[in-house]
Length: 558
Image (cartoon, rainbow, N blue to C red; front, side, top):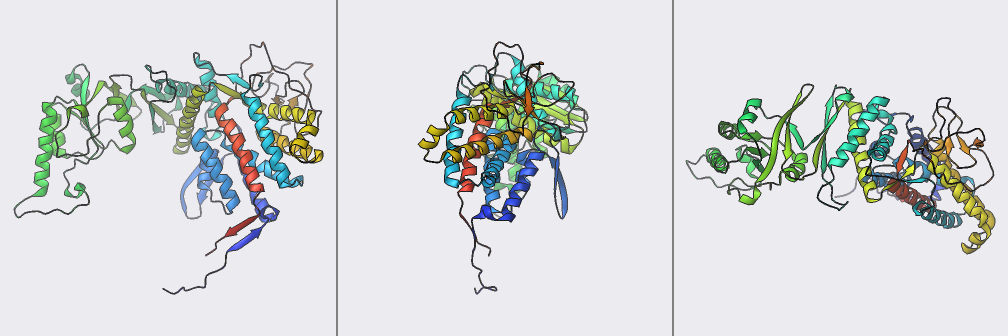
């Protein structure tokens, strides 16, 4: 077939970071991410030009997933941030801001790309050694024998998402629920931290946040015509369960994409119904109490089963199949023609009816250590509820990561200021020998260190959106915000005193070695995920070096 239009040659952009248009787009993305950062971050509304759903959020995952990036460099940075949040669930905005600031500061200081890459690689290795070392001043242990550290870490994630629109009482309540759901997901009879149960999240709109709760087991919608008296007649458990993943609607079209040969006088739908009833007879004979199906169950089969005292749950859905299997131990049956094998049956300990507002739910309790729970989240409208559901899922994931590596970093920007101060002091004291080892000049090394550390500090500065002065103390290198009601640093670990000297964070000040805080009864109010921030720091430097090293961008515009 001949082309209607002549094929256009690819567009080649030389030195893309010298292109003012590309740099402006990077600066715009950095401003979008910076302005959404932290507890007082500004919300973003995303919608297309033809109407439809309007998204209100401040999370990097939702922002970057729904905003189309026009350039390949921006797409590469966006993809890296999204991949990080998929794996670690936190610190996406930190990674994005740090990456873009590092690129921008390198350009503004006129650093050679090769020299900058060498220094940044060296500095991030120093950061890793410091953060993983025992002398790290911005790392605190997380004690899983007490709920305080778990709740503090969960609360820090909740408060950093302003689109959840929670007051202090609601934040405390939701943080406790996240910790509770996390503890439910840990198997009692295993020492492994790599094997977790499941937490199913159900959202209920137009209900008070205080009505949110966590239930052990699985909550499903109450089947039609199920009455409390029906459950009472079942007596005490445990109860036998059978689960089908195939449609039991009796519709011939549900058989699949196959060719059927139908003889004259044969009614296939009638024969299918007879097969379903035969299946029902076997289930009743096997004394099954709960009959569950991922898809639709034929009304006649439902009537037959209910008549024999069997609870029928249909339209379970794909999302609930895995937790249902974990809870009951049943094997999903994908055929209605064969008899149900004995090993396919599962068990539940008990049935309970739960209600929340206008929603009636059936609670299935496990007969063994299944580590399955259901988090019932309520909020005033759909937008807030969706943000809250996503935040709670990610907060629980962060707690699971923390269980594998039981420590956290100081939040509130204190880790960034302390780390930047430590790197500056360490690098300046050994500048000549490090520069010689990296085969670069002393001045280039100093400029690269300044670009790296000012990029870290810019993340801490991004937490302020109200024009307040951000300060750093000259002893512990923690971040401070002038507040007549607060007498501690931003993370809550260091208490203020009259002789504690402070200076504005965005001004020049002498280098110093931060003093580690020891023998204190204070506990940090705000914590960040150690695993998430450490990975974000490393990937941010890798991405910045990669982008700075790009010399040509070749785009096919056909």
